[in-house]
Length: 181
Image 1 (cartoon, helix red, strand yellow):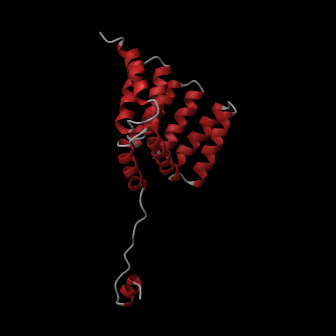
Image 2 (cartoon, helix red, strand yellow; image 1 turned 180 degrees about the vertical axis):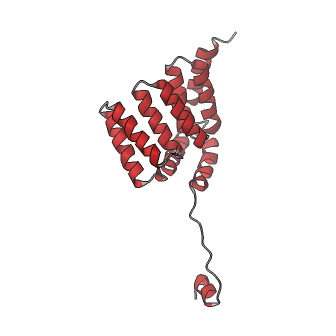
Image 3 (cartoon, helix red, strand yellow; image 1 turned 60 degrees about the vertical axis):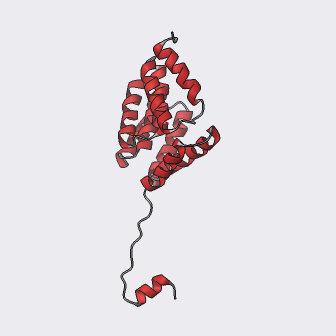
């Protein structure tokens, strides 16, 4: 007899085993990412991490997010922002939704709103490497090189082998601080 069935036969109460949470799935990936040996390994871990955070979205949120992505591709940024705002109303605690809203806002030319939304993403998941990357890019496009560098440095704390890690850090440092003396 199987141990579980034997336990039931002997009167033991079944023990509920909780499904792993997003945190349970994300934490080991983030740890491995911080110690990835090379860019290829980091890229694979980044994809797995994005999947973990995206899998947390409801089917409706995923559908609306895909629609927003199509709208961005069609240069219908206002529609994408509206759809993502509606999606956030359903799942306001999801960092990845805030990040995607920020991307739509940036595409629409509203960098201030995008930065606020990235703040929303990072307040919900401070280790969202994609939000740190996006924040660095948007700050650089606004010519706030010091802020871009700070965001990139935070990304490198979490994902030191990300594509172009050190070259971008050096370029941003040069833009923010000038040539070394």
